[in-house]
Image (tube, rainbow, N blue to C red):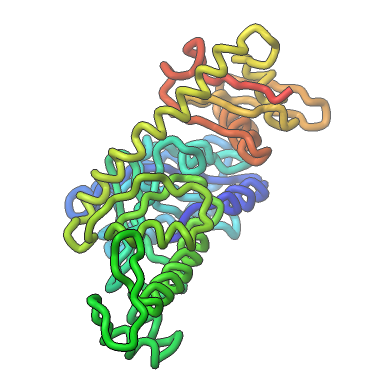
Length: 383
């Protein structure tokens, strides 16, 4: 299943249609909980269908449009691999779904655009992180949140040093397989962070890590979520030498990853990133309080929606699980608030969050009690 990226946000936001269906649900794990995910999706689809009927859609048209979701519900193999949260987007000529390493609240919304706010934690330093376990025999990448983790495939890269050398240079692969860590006659051996490595060994590992690093960036694309390295001590600085990903967090997890289960890697990584997450969010909240009264903050939904569309918002705090229905007229810049969800109304909190994100602002989706002044949304303006 694909990793959700900034480009996916842009593509989905660019798909304006008369009818866009967005569904979010927790899927549990395998077995009985996986079966529960199927039941949840079936119930959420029924909610979406009921909303469509209320908005004048015919039963025959509804069944035709929602057939891909019906097929997914019946896919037993699909549900056996689910863990965390599942986001589904359906419209005419669009059917996409994504797994994320945290659980969603159940939600089904129909509108003239897709509801994307629940995915914002993927793009800020606020709960999603990755662990890259480095090993000569098998490299793996874990997607994680506070309570969940799962392995995701690295795209188009060798996952072992032997596999890399086999295709890169068969002769070097033969030489490497007979390498003696204690050194040997005619071999140049140097100390690398306290470990004896031949020049050839160091070159092989560095080039292997460079290939892995390319795969990490291709897989994670424009994510800014923290990446924690795991491996024996001298692997970590060597990988950092090859690294170009923006957010590699120190320290890493030191030790042979073969000795750690995925659960243990996840637990050790959380101990590293927990304070990182808290610090970023707390600094943003502290800055908000510092500039209250200067005209650069607001909790007014109309002002915030307009600011989001005009690129004024630097940071937004928005309550999870809350919606404010209404419309934004781009021609007149008028924001109209409504009490009811209809096909014509949008969730303005969703629209403000996505527009802020697309204009390179930071969006924190938090519990309502963490939003300044206990409002549903608050923002800091750039100007």
